[in-house]
Length: 260
Length: 249
Image 1 (cartoon, each protein chain N blue to C red):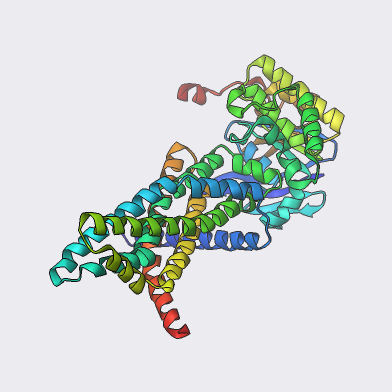
Image 2 (tube, rainbow over the protein chains, first blue to last red; image 1 turned 90 degrees about the vertical axis):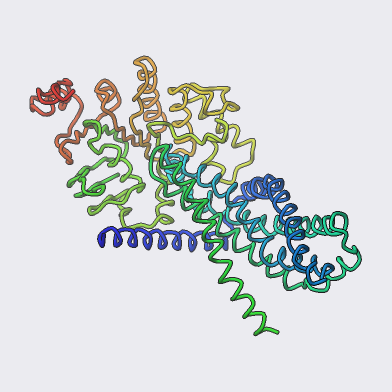
């Protein structure tokens, strides 16, 4: 049992070390602009444009259900018009960035791990290296940059659609006064909430790309290895996003207090 | 020149290379033969720095590549082209994009110049007009030819072949052998071919190394090795399984 625990902890720490080294190399490579512009635009298209449908549906229905639930509680204390204020803050600060990141992790993180894992088992990564091309420059950097660019944009869409659909549900379905509903949303939702959401989504974009790339590049040989890498990429990036969200929230709030 | 000194490499608890020494001179066509799973491909990957040894040294033109990091190795790898056992073509790209990959990454050429060089490389491997095909549309032999075109397009000094005729019928194997000889003679490259195809080894090599029991067991000119009376060399060249292996089969 002790041996198993030691092995597990050892493997986990070694994996963490390898992710850290890969992240360092990728960030260093980003700073020297070694990625091709064509690859970067393709990845932005794949991660950003192709993820729109899933992100928009998630944002819209999250805003709708949050509005309904908030209204059911607020109605008891006659605070109906504050409903969209709660929805606005929640969408900007937490639900927008986190749910968008989780949806993108499921779609893009899995795709990155599967693509790179297949390249690894078919020796395409080795072929890249023999062609004097660093896999970090060619494979990781475009995905990392694209993910960090696309995720904040997707998050903005999710937030806007979440609030708008919440507004429609509140005003059209639940009968809340639309003017006060919108006024209170603007009153309680500040610029800083939007900025926090965008900073978070930028970080989550990095997490999704780095974990997806790491799992793909380090996957075991064979179809089983690729399958496992794909699953682990989604699970690990989702868990990392949720854990990071808590600490990032505390950090950003503390930073805001210090700055202001 | 490629020189390997006392190379040791294990995977987990399994020792694969146990003190390999070899030297391949410039312009030579070296063939490494040995049994399946004997570590030939592992040795080949050490020559280009794809794998790091547990101990020992690999020198390419006097540069100790075993101490280099991945970025330093990129400079050395520009001297190499490698043809993989399964061709390892980038399946998201067309044949032309695969072949042009190295050129586009490292040389500042116009698209017209790239297209001209791609055309010349595909002509050399007898695959003209296949530029727009995808790797999935090619047969095994054609894939290996495209892999070779990709490896030679930027005129490397060393070309490494990992089991170039494995899985191919005798006629396609023969054409690949002829291609290896043509590339060697026309481009004056140093070739290193890993194979357990004895006919291929005899034809393409002018120096044969036999890997046995994790070391270079015998080496020499093909006529010398193929007429050797050493029982282990003889057994491998004649393809005779011992009694125990017959029973296991």
